Image 1: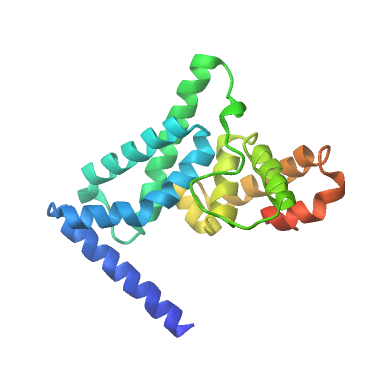
Image 2: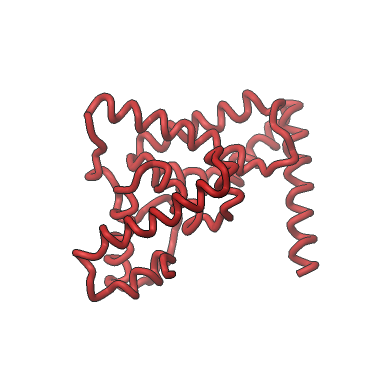
Length: 207
């Protein structure tokens, strides 16, 4: 445990150094910040906006906005938390624009569980099929519930970290998580009655 804490402290120290250099216009520091966070941000954004082109635009805009206002960033927080907050706001804006144009969300544009992260390269067809069903169900949640589920299960964020990203009280995040689990069980039940246990294990929705 002490070693893990020391490693975490070293990472935070290195991050603060990168931010200090980036504030001075160091291009290498900016590139390292992008490389260190782009994949995870893209995975989150892709799951939120459910469209590759929109996701690319949101990620690019999020980094541009983050770097433009880097002087206002408090190193008391993690850069990733702040970046995800910016990305989340932009996702909501993108979803609102899409809804105003189409009157509904286009679930057909959602890739089957592909979110920019190379998960398991040798998974069985059954596992891939089940995961596809789970994430299609997640795509039918409200934006806040979807963000909560993705951050909690896919990105291993604590409720406290999610509260910072979504700018909500921790109690509200826990409520979103609870309601999302209930809604997912309702959505999954008709299609996978005999696979409930497997799905809960796969999606981390047990309990």
